Amino acid sequence: MRIAIASGALSAVIVGASVPVTGLLQDYPLLTGQAMRYALGGIVLLGWTLVRGGRLVVPSGRDWVALAGLVTTGMLGFNACVLYAQRYAEPGFVAAVLGASPLVLALVAPLVAGRRPALGAVVGASVVVAGVVLLSGGGAWHGPGLVLALLTMLGEASFTLFAVGVVRRLGGVAVATWCCLLAAVAGGVLGTFFGGWQVPTTEEGVSLVVLGIAMTTVAFGLWYFAVAQLGADRAGVLIGLMPVAGLVASVALGVQEPTAVAVLGATAVALGCVIGLRRVSARPAPSAARPEPRPTAPR
Image: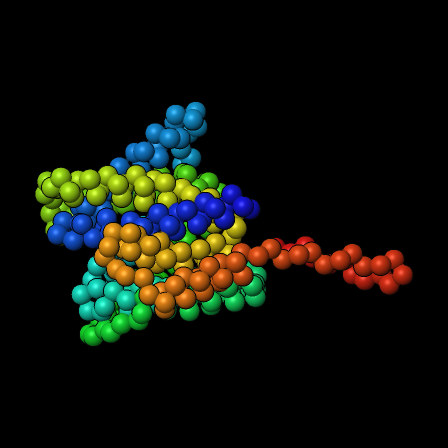
């Protein structure tokens, strides 16, 4: 479990710290840029599988449906919503709405699995959401800004929800590989008609490579491993570490000054992660003198 928590946390930190790198691609065509990034990530993941002597598991019919939904909403759709949301809303507002995704996962993921939401995961996710709101500082929006921010949040949640069953059947690396390959093909086809292709500058090329390897290959694999081990509801609280990592990166680069409110928000996120990731202790065994029904093992 410690390895799974560390994997999920590292994945969130990588994604959060890569925000400044993503900003270097503002002037590059969205879809074709994503296609190049995901193609690189898929090739690296496939190479990793083959070098280790494994083989890429071929998804079944229902797995293709889940993967298609993941790519459409959690990858290409998410990236598009993030870009367009910031045209109608301040980044702080988008980040605050996006920060609600841990609570969505804590409530929805157990229901999808046919069980009740765990109190610890819901409380932890709520504290994380409050911390993210403090970190982001809120912000204003106009026009479709609220709708786009909500779609961004739902896209972030769907990136995990669509993968839960597939990861259990295929494994995290296989899911990450197929998602990258599918996103590369879809992004390339759509990008040919919307946005077009162009040779990236040196700065843009380096950004695409960094995003393709660090944010895609490494972060995706680590995240799906954490989801498989912890469950989507418990792993979801770690999403709150993304804005914390983004804040640390911005401060390190001199783009943003640390404030007391931001430190308080980061502390709340850390506290929420601790609450949401706590293991539920087993009930004590009933005494022989007072026999009771055998308790169900905690999930």
